[in-house]
Image (tube, rainbow, N blue to C red; front, side):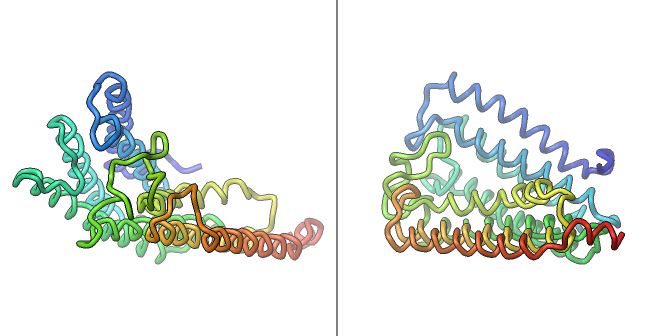
Length: 294
């Protein structure tokens, strides 16, 4: 168990603030009757606040696991917090004004606020990348924990990359093949009539929690090498899933209405993951051998 006092303070303060914003936004979803782009106007800040709470709290925990203090990682995390604050300020400000925050260039002020968000996202991406490099340069006592943290950081970076098509000149929106704000899944709002680039972005970003959770579930019931191999399989499968979901969205397909090619790709990923897992588990070192080796 890591010492909570070692957790990066700016990240934890921001995570606590975002938890409070999530509560306020949740109240706003029910108390404010305004609707924007087909959804309650406070739903977007609610989703962003929850996501930022998980993201920054997990990063703080990961930094606390480092064997040696990394000033580069800590400074990068502080920059990341500053950019996240800027992004949330714009989102909440636009909700108060009754305006959309993303892709809004309907006035000089709206365009300026959207530009602030775009720059903040870019700098956040760079800060996350620097943190990942700083973690790669350190050696952990437990190899499985090391792989879980590194896979989580790397794949969440992939999730950030998956958002890039949303801001391309020929895209400029979440949905592909249909306008933004159409019919969507409950809460998340992912389009049910066209592709939605937020899906791959969401899945990839939350690898930050998924891979450490996989390591936690594996526990110490298996030898270290087997756990590392299973994390490798899990990381590759998770990354491939992120790419498949982004590919599906770019082809204008709703998540729940995949075509035959997409279904075949999903089935291939599931089969390959299952076979690899079975091979690794069946070839693990027997418990008796481990006890004798100890």
